[in-house]
Length: 118
Image 1 (cartoon, rainbow, N blue to C red):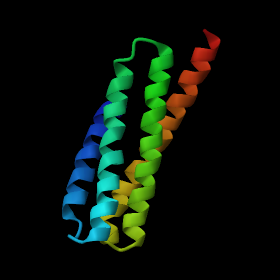
Image 2 (spheres, helix red, strand yellow; image 1 turned 45 degrees about the vertical axis):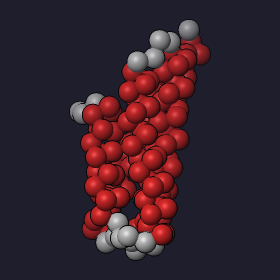
Image 3 (tube, rainbow, N blue to C red; image 1 turned 90 degrees about the horizontal axis):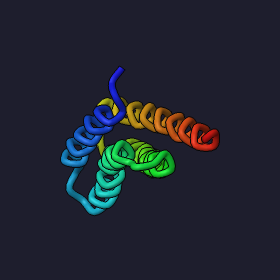
Image 4 (cartoon, rainbow, N blue to C red; image 1 turned 135 degrees about the vertical axis):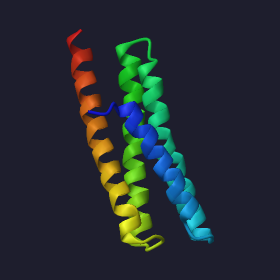
């Protein structure tokens, strides 16, 4: 199974490519910028979590990564439903965002449970 840091890095690359392919208009620019920011932030926060000096800091950084994943999932669905790209261009990216969101949610939940035990 691929580590979440590598998975979120690859996801960020896919986000960059998607945003680069969006049409050049004000709507796509705004929505694309939002997706780019949140989609690349997920992995950055996972990296920060891995560098955490305490379990509390780890949980906090993973929580931020989860929030960014949820936001990215929202923007990707909006891009799809507003028909800025074709469905086949974005569906697998939306699925990956959902899976990352679920993984990070479980990670946060587990880290908070473990923190409560110590």
